[in-house]
Length: 308
Image 1 (cartoon, rainbow, N blue to C red):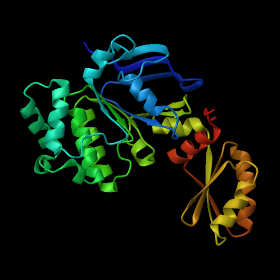
Image 2 (tube, helix red, strand yellow; image 1 turned 90 degrees about the vertical axis):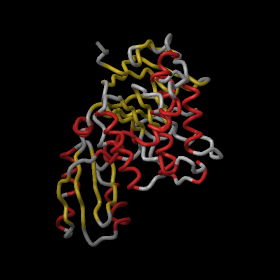
Image 3 (spheres, rainbow, N blue to C red; image 1 turned 45 degrees about the vertical axis):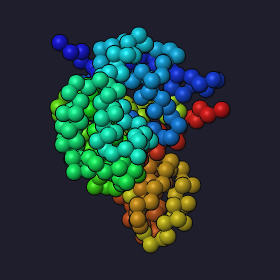
Image 4 (cartoon, rainbow, N blue to C red; image 1 turned 30 degrees about the vertical axis):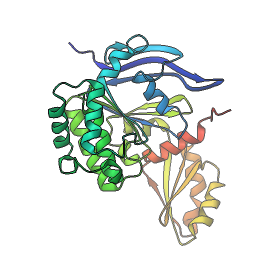
């Protein structure tokens, strides 16, 4: 009987010199789950992924990945994990088919040629199999990288900002594929800065400068942030109005959305009291739903940069 969690780790820590880049992170990811990893650049997300797949050894902590001990069984884990790196890392002077064949050789995939052909078909790459990889657009390179990560039939897929720099349609197609993979039983841990992608994950964790600050579903993160949000609209120019609003008691963030400003803060009563006089001036002030992006910025503002 398979273990309940694909990832089950406690107090995972990694240091580079005097700097702690991942500090006592605990995480549980269920099998077949799409788990989103959010956080500003330099927060240790990539380092954490590399520890999970055995490319880096934690300095402290314990746990399991796919039922194998994270510290003792890195070889077993590597064979069962697909890792799509943030930076495209395949040979641009080889064709798609040649790149996949190379990956299949590394993993010792049985019936290599048939496996490569099958992978090309499943990812919609068959018609481009003899095209040089360097000629591909960002979206097609992304699809090739995903194919290479899936070639050895992994149980866990680690995706590090997989859709950075690709167009909206390619992003949507990619996420449709991710959901199909999860439905087939593959566990996915994905880092992203796109809030629409975060909302497509089953659960999320927010890592800021090595510290795990929040975890749960998107709805749980929004509720847990305890933010009140208001929508302010009026004739006053947004930059001037925004600067004015930022100086009011209870206002923690002001975000423009076209001609509308979203104003958020933790002290709901104080925020409402500060915004009330704006109605007298003819501005439309109405309550709004707090978004995941509001929560993201709220957490980022409170995070302490660990760079020394």
